[in-house]
Length: 105
Image (cartoon, rainbow, N blue to C red; front, side, top):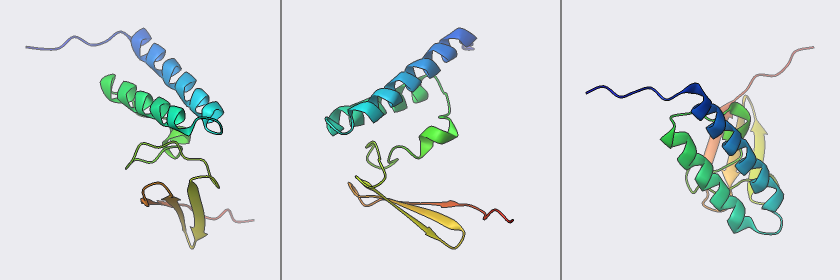
């Protein structure tokens, strides 16, 4: 039995909803961090339900281990060493290493 494909407007609405939730998570983090964590969890649920990959600029804004919203300096430690960016979640201790290259002048 084959599944029907979802219309494109459904994915567009899902992306818009994810955008709204991430913006709300950023606004609410200083006053209600548990609420911003809930927004991140809802965003991840939407992305898995509709099979949408998160855009690159959102992927580093939450911990993939504990689903907490991350803000550098508050609950995220960022270190540059060699050719890697190391991000450590201060909530669960999860380390994420991302390679990068230096820009040459």
